[in-house]
Amino acid sequence: MSCLCVGRGGGGVVRVGGGFDLRVEPWIPVRLATGETVWLGLCELFTRAHEIEDLQVPVPPAAAGLMRILASLTARVAADGDEFLDDPGVGENIDEWHGLRDRVLKAGRFDPKAVDAYFAREDLEGRFDLFHPERPFLQDPRLRAECVDAKGAPNASGVNKLVMGRPTGINGAVLFGHFTDIAPVPIPAAEAAWHLIAQLYYGPSGQCTPRRITAERAGSTDAAPLRKSVSYFPWAPDLFSTLVLAVPSPQVEADWETDDACPWEAEALNEPLGPVPAVTWPGGMLTGRFRHAALLVPSPDGRTVCDAYLTWATHEKPQQIRDPYQVLDPRRDGEFQPREADGARALWRDLDSLLLKDSRDSSRRPPALEHLPRWLLPQLRVRAYGFDQDGQQKDSVWYQATTPPVLRWQEENDTAMAHHVKRCHAMAEQTGDRLDYAARIAWKIATDANTDLSPTAKVRLDARKPGPWAAAAMTRYWPAAETAFWQLTRTGQATEQVARPFVDAALTALDDALGQANRADIRVARARQRARGLLLALLRPAPATA
Image (cartoon, rainbow, N blue to C red):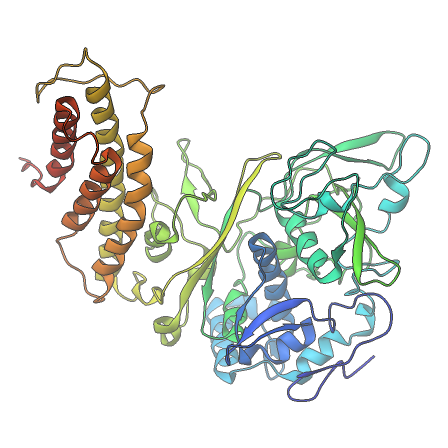
């Protein structure tokens, strides 16, 4: 097969017969530089990447996984002459690799011939088909025979299990739409691809559809590699540059000398009972660490998915590898762990972790944000994709956020601003902690008749009875603190006076939480005065040390 992409730089689409071919079927929504939203297949997405401003995938965990898949594909098609970004020889010298990346970036677009050459490879024929009978994309066709009940009848998981956000089980809560397992609603094939990716990267641990390979029907799985995490990507004004920057540089932990293969490139399907293969660079580290196996069941016309199998892929211990898009936070034992997603935490509160160099006792920024081209820094933002989950089955909220162009403030490029951002964030967090404490103190004083009202008296708090004021105050404080933070960084110059805006925001939030109706109450008035004093104390100079 050849010439998948035709027309204006691959702008036309040639649809091949049968199945749902992700190379040419429109399944990825993007926003063009013109502002128009269009849906593209993989081939056209790469040939038109320089015309694309942003991805528009509405499911953030799917977008985070898709970015890793696209980064793997970018390494295969991004080249300067005969040198490709995934060439093992280039990885022997990291400076040479960065030089190659710079040359690719300055070319301004992917070579349509290189894109077409990859997607038209004979050994990949059918591998991008979502419903291929032997090698469906990122799926395992053996599940048809292995996921069966005691009588040998098919035992699928259900389409509701595939689609994140839908309730599962007969008694599942109906939250985002009236979907039940009694009358499951099929999902368009394009959207099914999103949720397939989301499940492979963020799927739960614990009980799953049993899979029989030996005499035993095992029915449990480990958590997916990105579960409950947040990913950070350098984000350029065009998708071409974003994808090139997303390709991780060769890392010590990954094997970049051994032949690298993504799941759709491997000669054979994985061996569920065999050892986990070594993590290779870049495809293996980005697309080869799945703990789940999946299989989609299409409708007769191949336009929708009406059922799905979701089960375990391996029970072997996973290979440890640093994900290139995650912040690592220190633990008490001196080790580091990926930062967990928090749906209540705004992206600006992570900026110091993305700008400052790594140190022994602080958070470590994602490798993908290291060694960025200095000439591109003024244009680069940060895109975050997070999924607030527990480690097993509970999903709370997913989110996507993008900063303004802040990577020009990285410590290597602008030390003063990097540390200014750190001071601003530290002051915001300190003020937030003080506001939470002050609001709890105020509630105790206002509602407990036995509390000593003298200004110097110690107030003992009951963690089980925090009162409503703290939560109300914090809800008001953080949006105001974000506004103050960006005002303090707007000029692009550091300043020493960072406390007052956050304290003012906290005082306003406290007043709003206490409300106007209770101002005449003497205990509320004294509680308010005590809480304000705790906040204003943050403006006093720190005592001099000998």
